[in-house]
Length: 288
Image 1: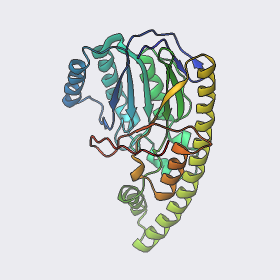
Image 2 (image 1 turned 180 degrees about the horizontal axis):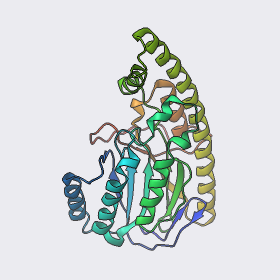
Image 3 (image 1 turned 135 degrees about the vertical axis):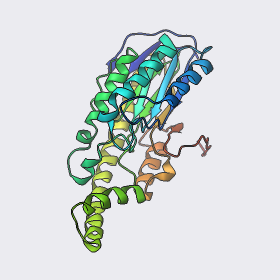
């Protein structure tokens, strides 16, 4: 593909010209502690060697940069990783797209009714610093959004979806039970509070999903319209998220499936994700 320039949604960034485009997918780095461990140096060296012949790289990071919501504690180590990655790849990176995972949120806010953006403020601040490391200034103030890359008369739309709040099961239950246990509550009271909290969380998540999908649908339609007017129509829509669709609760999963292929929202061609800690490609084709 021949890339002419790079534009992030409605925000203009410096024009970048290239003759090919590569995507580097990273996920579930789970960087913890204040010092970057040796295994990450090895990963960066592997990336440097495998990408030595490639140019014009788009990095996509599908969540869980940090571990257990400890972004502040691991801030310096995370920044060191991306600084070293920048040195390894040089000026080959033309864009970086990052979405949050369940390990990137401040989990204390699972116990409150505050806005999601408050629980992700440390994450958003970190992402803006990472962007700046690669010379990209988006000034993000929310955890989801879209970006268009013009590839010589054909555009690719990246959709950043935030599924970081949508996890359930033992991980969620264990975190909440441990919190209530510190208050010396008996098991029946802990179970009752857990049930009430999960009911409240499910309502908030559903509201957040509807708002996010509505916003993303509007953004993609605007991007498609602008790209078409400029003679570079969108031919590929790539959604980035932390969770595989199969990991979401049924009602949440159905909302996203409707978004991916509904008539009111643009079709999404690829769902690129992490969380499962394995490498797998799944093909799902419909009549369209």
